Image (cartoon, rainbow, N blue to C red; front, side, top):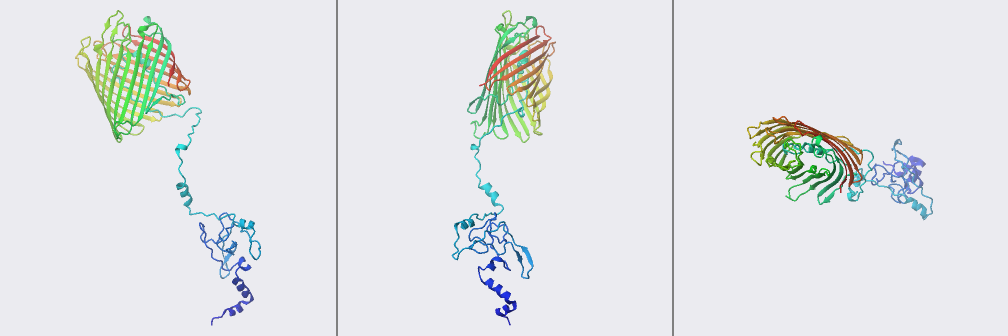
Length: 592
C-alpha cells in the first residue's frame, strides 16, 4: 500500500519537513540560495549557447527589469544556479554551470511596498543586453547596406614628382619608310637628308609637355620656332667655292590627333585620325641663292569597320631641294631646284585570331623643278617626273606579345611622264620586293620593327641592266633608362637617277640618336647619320656622314630655347660633288 505524505515526513524526519516547507513558500530565502534541481532557463535571442540559462548581456551588466530568464521576474535577481555546480539526484557533482562575467546588482532592502528609489531603478536599466544575430549577419549588412562611394565626389590626389620618373613603355614606332615608296625622298639631296634626319620630336616630361588646343575630339599641337645662326657652306659645294652666311631659319610644325567615334556608320566602334606636318624656310641674307624651303608630313586615318576589319588611309609629302653638286645635274647652278614627292596609301587589314593579313594599294609621284644654270640657261627636268603604283601584301602572326614575325611582298611599277629622257633612254621599270621580319617588344623598354629581303627591278629599255639589291629596314626605340632614349633607323633601296648609262642608285641610310635628360626641363641630344650611294654601271660613289648636337631648355609648357650644331660631309667620286659644312643655330620655340 502506497504511503501517504505524512508517512514520508516521518521517514525523512524533521530535516525533510523543513526542506519541504521551504520549497512550498515562494520568495523564501531558501529559494534564493540553492536548489537540488536547477530550473530550466529560457534561451535568449542571439545567444551562442542555447542551453545557457543566463540572461545577462555580453558586457556582463545587469539585464532590464523583468528580462531575466530565471529568478524573480520583478527584480532581475540571479538564478539559483548562477555560480553553482549542478548536482544529480544521487548528489554527485555535474558540469559546472555558466558564470556571469559580472555579478548582478543586489536588490536593496525595501519596505513592504517594495518602492525603489530612482538611483536603483536607473542602475537596473543602464546597460541593456546587446543582441547579435547569426555569424553571417554582420558581413552581409556591411556589404549590402553600405552605399557605394560616388567617384565624382572623390578628390583626385596627385603625388609630388621627386627624383627620376618611372620608365614608361614606348609605343612601337611605325615601320621605317621604304625608299621604294618614295623614289627620291631625301636621297636625291643627301646633304639635306643628313641635316634633317635627326629632327624628330623629343620625349618631353609631362610637367613641361604642351597641352595643345582642343577642338572637339581633336587635339592640335602647333609649334613655331625662329632661329638665328651661321652656316659655313650654305650652297653645299666644294670648299674652294664655299661662301659662309648668316642663317635665319623659320619653322612651323603641327601635330594633331583625334580619337573617338566618327559618324560615318552607326555600327563602327572607334576610329583614329592623326598626323604630323612640318615646314620651314632657311634664309641666308649674305647668299640669297642658297635660301631654300623644306617640309614633310603624314596624315593617317584608321576606320574600324568591325572587331576584325580595319581600313587604313595614309597621305604623305616631302619637299626638298637639290644641291648644286649633285651628279644627276652635273652642272653649276645658281638656284636650288625643288623636289616634291607626295602620295597616298589605302589598305584593308583583316585579323584572324593571331593571324593578321593586310592588303594595301599605293600611289606616289615625284616632280622636279627646272634648274637655272650659272650662265642663265634653264635646265628642264620634266623628263624626271614619274609616278609609282604599287600593291603590298603583308601577313603577320603573333607568336606572343613579345614578337610578331611577318612576310611582306611589294609589287610596283614606275612610269615616267615622258617616254624617253633627255638622253633618249626609256626608264620605266617594274619591281618586286620580298622581305621578312618581325615587330618586336623584347622588353617594355625595346620596341620596333626589323626586316630584310631582296628587291629586283626590270627596266623597259634594253640598254639598262636589271638590278637586284639587298633590302634592310629598321626602326627601333630603346629606353635605356628613365632619362635616356636611343633611336635607330635604317633604310635601303633602289632609287632613280638621270645619269646616262646607269639603271639606278643603290642607297643605304642609317641614323642613330641618343637623347638624355639632364633635368626635367633640360635635355641633350647627340646623333650621327651615314649615307652610301652607289650608281650602277658608272664609276660614281658617294659616302656621307653627319653629326649633330642639340640642347633643349624648356622654361614652361609653351616656351623653350633650342641650340643646335650640325656637321655634314659628302665625299663623292664625281668632280665638284664633295662638300662639308658647319651650321650653328639658336632659337626660341613656342608651343601654345
